[in-house]
Image (cartoon, rainbow, N blue to C red; front, top):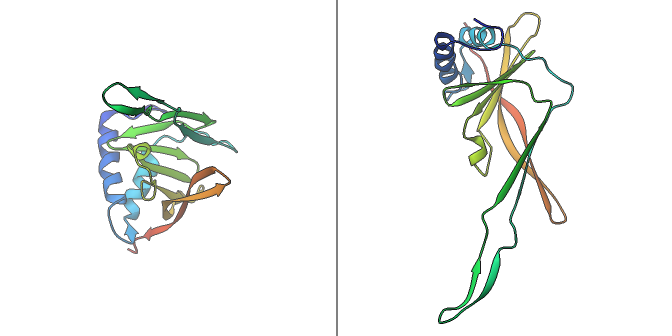
Length: 165
């Protein structure tokens, strides 16, 4: 296995593990979590990383059409995405997985198509030294409005604990 890529055998194994980890329930299988930590290559972490999306609409056009009356054409929403120091990620099945020391981010590949990102991603937290899984957290989207600008941000809350064996 290459340090930065996953061959098909490991990718299929990781996909099956991811499906089990994100399944409903209050606990997750520790053995699966350990194996996933081992399988996914670790990307160096940076102190600050950021991913943002600006969404807006242009004014469109309006006028008068003979025999019809007043008409208005709205343009489609325009979107601009930008990133800063984002670590490498891996597409595995319907997931995008990013592994930095002590932290495995698991995100639905379609998260950007949803208005509300709640429940669309989770993270597996583990001890850096022992590689022992500690907990899983799930995403919750929140909003902060100031004047006419709304900032949506995602935070993670406790979700699952390791199964007791």
